[in-house]
Image (cartoon, rainbow, N blue to C red):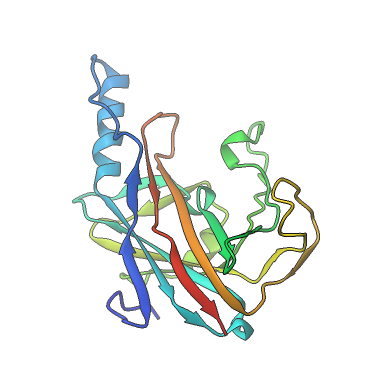
Length: 216
């Protein structure tokens, strides 16, 4: 079932845009019109984050939801938003809790022709739902592109069931060893980049505030 955005058991807030907004595009021709179109399309998407502030660790670890709303009057095709999502965690002492080692971003993978791309993410995608109740959205989890229909809200629910099993004081050392995320208090921050599904350099970057979470 599509989750109610007014559910007060969740912390909910817009993601804050960071960096400079795309500058006005100058010039003429097809490339100019394409860049202008990309800017207009991305400007009509609003991003939010929803997190339950107390969560049972037995239900799959820490869960959060990224909400994308196409507020425009046209459908928009953009890069798969899961490809650019980064989750940052700290424990209650302020030490980083390292996410499992994922694969390189899709944009950095060199493929030829229609060769499949093996995307390894540091989190588990639990559900993808829309306010139109579109069927089988979760089947698109590995797609390179994602269609956001006009006037529609999309919710991407992801979980963090495991983290790296390493000395938390070894900030720069990564390991492939993992363990179940433990009960306790955490601070969560999400970073996100919104990209068009083409070669356009136009993009928007976002971050959430630090959110206090308790796994019980």
